[in-house]
Length: 159
Image (cartoon, rainbow, N blue to C red; front, side):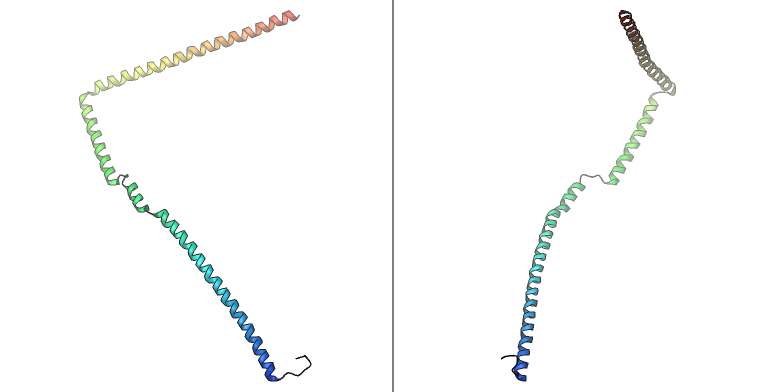
């Protein structure tokens, strides 16, 4: 058929129906292909999510047991408080007992003697420190005098 020939209505309608049919078949094929790709992508996403979930579960595996094991190494607050109260009570009883062994006068004498010994020891340390300071100063002066004397001798030799 050439373009100049007249076309019957029937042929024209059949031609248009064929074109529309081909058009919709192509669209349906594209949609089916797109749906198939989407299903594949969903399957990949599910596989990745499953893999991540397995990794996280593996990390958490036995975490409750490990936490319970660590918790066993800690002391409950009630036990600690009870121990502290008993320890403080024992220390107070010990102080009372020890204070009954020595009179106040004996304790003051002991304290004064101890203080004097500490003062003497500190004084010895300061005295030794002072002696070393004087020795260092004397040697520094001698070194300075020697340096000046050497400079004068060198000056006299040159002139």
